[in-house]
Length: 171
Image (cartoon, rainbow, N blue to C red; front, side, top):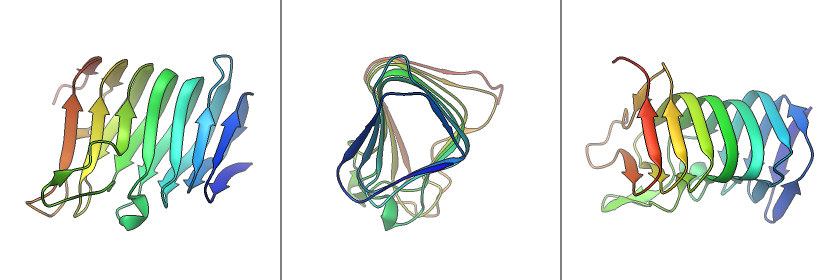
């Protein structure tokens, strides 16, 4: 079963489920029950202003992607509480300009426990943001790369004003 949210508005999940993929194509998927466990065995994508919010649930995802195009502008992956575990996060683009990144978009960690094997920010010609204000982030043995794009005026932005960050790889 695939989970896809199209258009505006918000959908709240309070139960436990396993999905082949999760897509937020506009609007918000809000996982907000501390006893819920959501598993995505395949790719998850945020596009066209789609948002995924973790407000107390436990999420176990494979790959989470914000595309390399304007379709990813205004997308948010927000963790306020609960846990998010993933294999790969790829933030191709989430907005900004030559003047700087938009720190209110992209991957926002305000609380909770987040762990992933690999994080790649700015994989194209644009800004991509990881903003850590609370909680904890652990990046495992995969890559933790802030900019692989091809524009010297843009790149990946990591801002840490709270919480804890650890990277366990040896490179």
